[in-house]
Length: 147
Image (cartoon, rainbow, N blue to C red; front, top):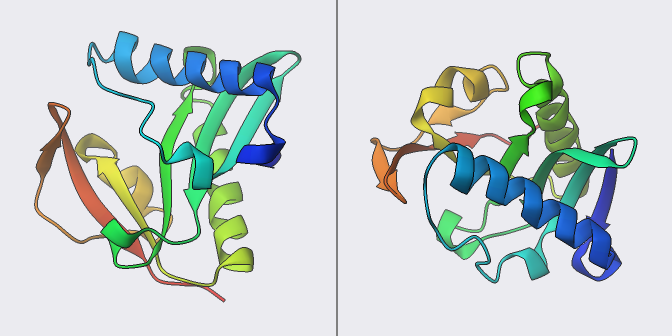
C-alpha cells in the first residue's frame, strides 16, 4: 500500500484510480454519478496494488467543511477478487492509523448503510438518519480521534 498526494500521483495511478472507482461505484452498483468531484486534488490517496493491478483504494482528507472540519475517509473500494478476504479491513486500518497519526481529529465517513456494522467494528458511531446519496442509502458515521 502506498500513499500519494495529488501532486505525487502519476498519470497511470490516476487512471487506475478512476478505472477502479468507475468499476465499483458506477458499473457494479448500476449508479451513474459524477465521480470527478474536485475533491481529489486536496485528498491523500491510498493505493493498493497486486503486481501491476490496482486492487484497493480510498482517499483521506485532513479536514472537510461539510463534516464540520473533521478528517474524512471516502471512496473506499476494492476489486471483486479481494472482497471477503479481509482486505477491506486492511485498507481501513491503514487509513485510520494514518489519520490518527497525521491529523489527530475525529474521522467522518458517509457510509453505504449496509456497511454500518463493518465501520462500527472500527469505532465509527452512527451520526445521522439514513439518507440517499446518488440513489443509494448512506449513513453519516463518526469515529473519535484516537491519539
